[in-house]
Image 1 (cartoon, rainbow, N blue to C red):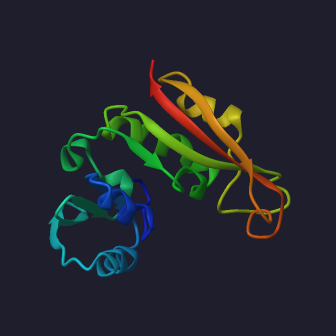
Image 2 (spheres, rainbow, N blue to C red):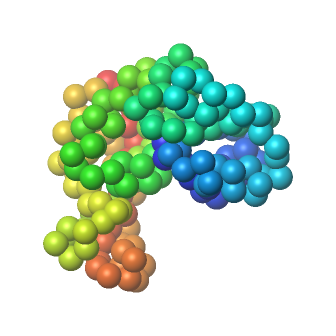
Image 3 (tube, rainbow, N blue to C red):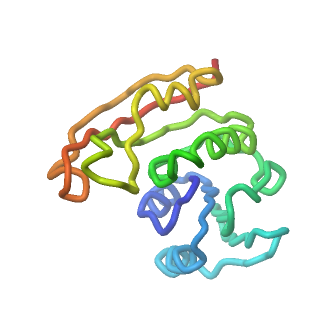
Amino acid sequence: MPLCGKTLDIPWLLSNGYRVAGAELSKIAIEQLFIGLGVEPQILQVGEIDHYSAQNIDVFVGDIFHLSSQMLGLVDAIYDRAALVALPKAMRDRYTAHLMEITDQAPQLLICYEYDQNLMEGPPFSISHEEVNQHYGGRYHLTPIASANVPGGLKGKCAAKEHVWLLQNN
């Protein structure tokens, strides 16, 4: 889970028997995540990254661009709930290329928003179908699996759609 923060998705995944690896910039968010899990992590420094680990969970704290495939290990799937939409346009090309590289292009569940970017600056930023195709279309088969209006609008400021994509190797 790139840019995982202290998401509620991690406890759900762990409680359903999944092993989770995440990446996050905020040390405070990860400390709060482990407190919420009721688990004391082991913390090791690996290069410029702090590696927090406990049973079935590894979280790498630091700049995701310093995270390598060797540090991360084998990845079966990626769940991008809020990473791509959190990054400004100038960083998204680099991020998507890096994510595919460090995960050996693992299949991905991608959730993003689409809205009139003139009405709200972001984050989250608006990601169009065309942009998803630009980042991933050459390497993955893209399947839109759900699309729904965001109830009450995005941050209560503007109408938006949430799109869920399944990205599988060609």
